[in-house]
Length: 465
Image 1 (cartoon, rainbow, N blue to C red):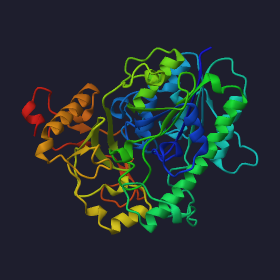
Image 2 (cartoon, rainbow, N blue to C red):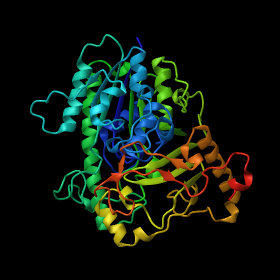
Image 3 (cartoon, helix red, strand yellow):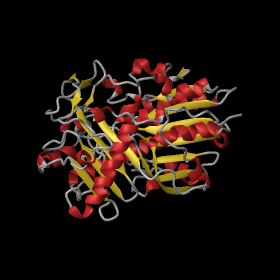
Image 4 (spheres, helix red, strand yellow):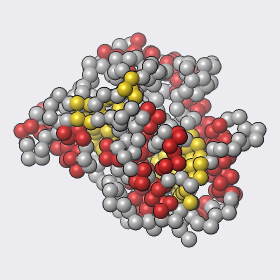
């Protein structure tokens, strides 16, 4: 019998969990890593919620599968049949969803290919809806199964929520102990950022608890040895310089696979992308790989057949809370970022509200210029703070990566190549001048570039401009 697949995922966690070396205790995720394979250089295809998940679950770039914005604001897949649940169901899998998904509007989630939506019945004596989602997933795992299953189980715990300034506790007082906490690397070590990250640590502990319920159910029902577990998140955490940014702080994600060939507590340093998960599942599940897939299987990395499956990863932003068209290519040594509509400062609606954001805005973050092109040497500048795009000594690297990015855009059918990207009809955004994503929304307008977009491959002079 073919193996089962458990896709268990979170919002806005980045790599800030224990097995990546951070002081964020997540013992259940740590144990999963010690039993499976951890990918240290895993990246999402978009540091925004719906596009990231759509890329993972279709094996294609967001602009290829159509998810150019947020599903709850009107964006959607161009073809739901590309979704992994659809493909596995067509190949004999039972498919089930518990908790969060972000590839369709809530009322349309059945169209993604799920046989079972595990959110209908209340769970007695459980008020926490995320714990209820974990328990419903556990109940599904305890049922008799006459065919292999694909279970998607998603949690919201590490996403900011509520109307207040803090994390995950609505308008209540801060939760975490900030005294012995250090904020993420892009942020200054200040009382406000320490408190913010201390609260994140509490949310990560909740996430770990929820995931542990599902892991325990796999083991209790004798399914662990015959189930591929895919544990990941959509993108970086919701701080300034992170979520909705194309640096490692925004695109770096946890990715742990356990089961079958993914075992032994191995750590892999090879570059991998979320789009590589789909073909990996196809290989493990003995399912034909659809022709549109842009990723490559990770199984050879787990088995030791190779030390590298790709030499670069790509990512993009189109619309998040508002439009901010950007593209990036990252190699082992360098990252190149291109902003197609550079602004005089950061796009404030694309940064979630927080005390860290307030603190950085008060320090002048809102007036910091945003370069049209950015180039970082990750060996000497791992925090991507020193832009080398204007340094003549790096002109050759800049031109090579610019060309590499433009080739990828053409090969994947990126509409920005023609200088225009249209939103879905009815898609909503915040005005670009607004201070936050919590202001009233307006209809999204097309992204129209001031020039002709990406030049043809043979136009060397235009490409070097």
